[in-house]
Image 1 (cartoon, helix red, strand yellow):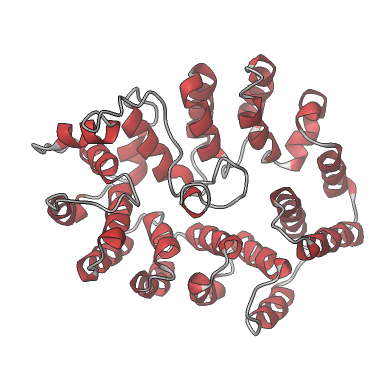
Image 2 (cartoon, rainbow, N blue to C red; image 1 turned 90 degrees about the horizontal axis):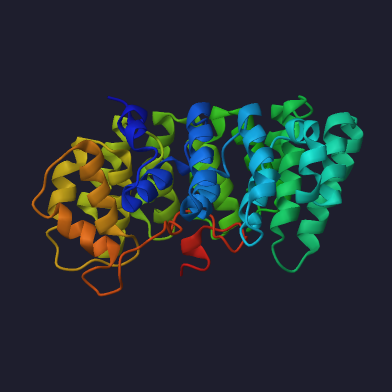
Length: 374
């Protein structure tokens, strides 16, 4: 049974812990089935308690006509205090589709975005490149990271790739120059993004080598590009970076989202070689999100420990893993109660929280665990 076949019956569930785990497990997967995206959007508009989490987890996905129609229909009906949650989805709609629905979506995006979309749809190569360079220069000159500007630059980069306005040789020149510097420029980071769009497999070793860099914006794009290949070549190149404290978080994220036997084995071997409880927790969470019984011995053994690091919600991950796979364990209900906070007297969780591997809801563009979740 494939990963998607295992998770499909639990895509929508009233069990808050399993729902959160499912959303986290599919968040970074490329090309989710269109019907999944639509079903989750329907659930978000139907169930206000799930809106925040579902909208955040779906932000990476491509919205087709049916999904956009649903967004257009429900946005005017949303509570004003919650409208910002859906606006992020609107900003991720492909320019052509957004432009087609401009009359209904106009008030949810700034005039700058609509001007950008018009340029992408009607502009020439020179016009698009001029705007691209202008925004990249703005990003470089700002004292702090500007997520909206970076998102605009990515849309321009995607348009450049889509129109065939960049060659592999041009990418080679940019990356070659960037690798000689201590820090990647925004042009270099956006070139990494383009590598992912172009599916340039020759860059897999180079991308993997960037996992030990100390730049979250670069690492996010490297991670997405590597996951997009969905190949064991990526597993082979990334596995050594599971052994380094500097690269373990993003390397684990990559292998967690490549659903192959080799990825599972690499995570198991890394867990067996690891002594630090924080890293062990991280690897067990990744193995749980693979939904493979191959990792069952390691997961059972790990849960015999007396204490956990708190870096991940380990009881929730393991409870969901056993539940989705239909496996029995005498401690399953205990894990559930701990994950819900009942044992600590916190009270039952009534909504889905932000996963530590997900985009921070503050809008920084960083992962939650690297931002407000520290």
